[in-house]
Length: 316
Image (cartoon, rainbow, N blue to C red; front, side, top):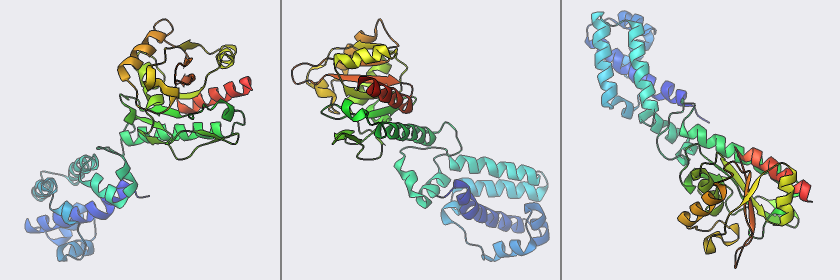
């Protein structure tokens, strides 16, 4: 694990100080004066001046860094800029370069796991895409542990398998939904999770959840289990409201993670939720080539998993 602050200290700071020290010396300041302005020792200034400190060429050649060095150097040399003001100017650029820019790229190269996240992100932003993705994945992992540890859950896994999914806050497509690759299967009476959750690996279960959200439902997570009248009755006994929607032809085939006709599915789910927009579960009773399935909904994967565990123990 490598923090972006380490990149600042190891790559940006030595380069910036080296360039700034050289600029101040060119402005006619002595090593002692440069040391006082930069808050470092004279020996450090000497090392910067003689090239004894390694610099990062990409930082040194960045036009914004060069511009900052020129402005700060001129300001410090003339007295128009205080050391505190110079620090503030540098901090502004550092934060900018950390946000999907030069320092973010250097950080990604130094810590390759960051490359798994598409697009630009700011590691200091509490609402960044990186943190949002990790929170969703963590929630799904926690929910999966609950399901794996439930002795009764395996009996609710449909023939095509279950999946536990959760969406990012502003999700609009299946790529914004975290789920289990390959689905959860009943292996000799035990629920088996084949791999760590990822984004974009569930199609149909994710599509049902997204359809519910487009219809105005606030759920961010769902899990599919097999349907029987007893399962719907158990949901009612537990105080959960389940509503039926029409199976959507081949697209709804057994609730599997197969391609779905988004328009037909949206219409079916929206119609089902029209009178009960806050339902806790959706279900379809199947048809030709369509396995009946129940979709338990909830605010997050951990809550949905707990509801499914409770359901499984009630049905057993």
